[in-house]
Image 1 (cartoon, one colour):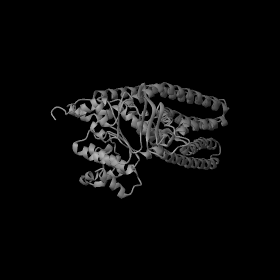
Image 2 (spheres, one colour):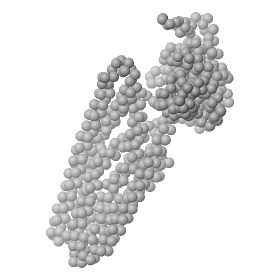
Image 3 (cartoon, one colour):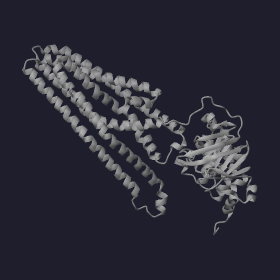
Image 4 (spheres, one colour):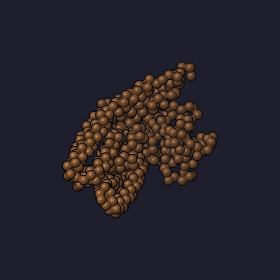
Length: 571
């Protein structure tokens, strides 16, 4: 486990952990060696010259003081390292998750990442602060004490040493028997977390359906399964705990009987027997604690293994010799992209000259949004190439590519902070005048004026305190502030009211001015602003041309236009 922990921590934190483990080991050895001084102390007290125990008592006190100082230092080091590791690993995990391909984020990973980033990471990094010192002590201190017993009487020492392989076998057997139940409990935990998130997100639907007084069956079932899995985990740990207790008690009894036999035979003094029994009893406490510590460590190791698996998942590769694009034209060259078993983009070729606007239309599932994601390199293509300024996006560093592109999605996510903080995500070093100008161009200033707190108004988690149109204005202001030469728009007005739609359209017109634009259009009215239109279906281009030209052809695009412009009954 220590090796896995060091690998997960990386070079930045592994050295501090190694130092802490060494300090804890030295502390455990010092504790065991200090008990060796009990032999001369008790020999003097039980012998004919009790006064001779004085110097040994002083030495024993000094040894205990050294041990106490070492224990304080090692515990403090463990707490500090644990706190530092927790903070550092949160940053490392967040940075790694941000670099993983979007395709990694499947639906079933919502609960998994949620558990990992909260309880899982806290449990894993808590090993250094709370579990490592007791675990090292439970292993090293008894072995040191056994070495002390061996030094005084090899027969009693061998009897005490007999516990080591039995304890190791019990711990290994317990770990194997609990592996399946631990894995099952994790799966049930992940499922329950996902169901809780689903239950919270489904509140509008449940309330609209008048089901607020009913129990949410899926959540109840998942919680019951979690309870059953937790019970099975506890029951699977019980035989190991009982076996460990019986083994330790049996070995202690064997040492007691052997010591009495040797004392009666005159092979060993009463003081030595008494001391060795005290040492054997001192061995029993940490050994018995192994059951509880082992269970916690197994749980932490399971979380650590899952964290290690995520951290070892490779992000999209960065180029060894990156190229800086000099132009801002876009090109898809015989691109094929598959998602699972489905071909989303099928041998597609397309180009967008610098400064022109391309509209992509078509039915749902045609691959329209995927084109934008491939341009932004959220995924790598299976064959062909996606180029910006004539350079394959795989030959451009992520930082450089993202600096060239501003993206406005249909579903805008805002971070829990102020409006100004969310706008500045476009360019953190922008001056105040630039931020205000971007807000005015996106007509965000109208929103700011009517909000209590103005620029300092909090938008809530995900932007929940703003309407959809207001969130879009923040997103457009952010893109305007970024001032990137390439703009990708995933239809941003499909769910807006007329007032917000007009304001957002005005902001988008300013955003698109003089830039290379690819817009995914769900509302057909937006395609009139494009220099060229492509109609996509099944990952292939069915038609392409100018808006008026495609209407005259009377093909698929013309049919889509007619359907979209037909008034809905009752309007």
